[in-house]
Length: 325
Image (cartoon, rainbow, N blue to C red):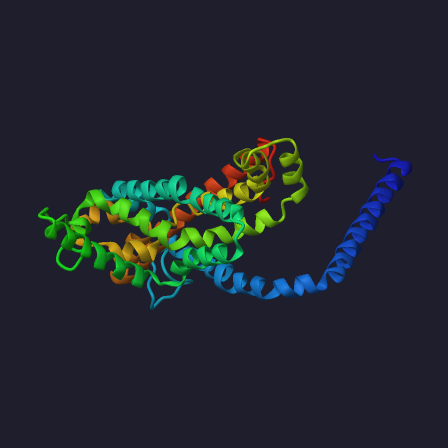
């Protein structure tokens, strides 16, 4: 049995824990009141995520049901992991996985570094008018829809109307069937992504470059560092935290390789290299009415993204850098 002193000691500890908890709550409310305008500014974004990101997660239950629109989400029969088993046994699953991984890796290794390179080059331009002109030109494609981008691609590469094939025919060369040849699909998708989004991606890196202390450049210049040396020893280290954060976020979305882009560029001749998880989920879930299967495919893709996000963040923090959580 506990002695009276032990009971009193336990009660004292409970009292201290309650006091410390109250202090933490008071400190939290004090911080919120202190930065109330920042929280107010973040409120619309928070509401957006609650409504459009967290709210729809209730629908993930469909991945474990034989969903029937007439019975609804709560009364549809449960089937466990049956849909995932069917998905893994599907002969086309390997092609979906391969295509998604290849396109994701191409964008990661070739597209991701280009905004960094552009931002560094623009930062080195001293003529403001010329720099603003270049920024406007490289930003502009981002505001074009993927429908327009795909149309421009057809105008350039189609067999009959494409100006590239017209130039080749005029020069006495044979036509190249770019749009129906599987060998060209992945490079076309990569080039489209670079042309459309690389300029817009420089905005974050340009903002990060502004935060680098100019005294570091002056010290490097006094020490006799060349322009390339200043980029290597001052600019890149200053960009490193931003690069790490964006890389972690990119890995978290590694299987989001562009649904609209791929859907618009698909055709039956290249389906083996163009079918990805997003288009398969759309075809099965929306067009064929297999809602549960479409949700299961999306749920699997999200789990892979979560794994890469947590793993990359863990490895980054292990290496001594700061992660996102």
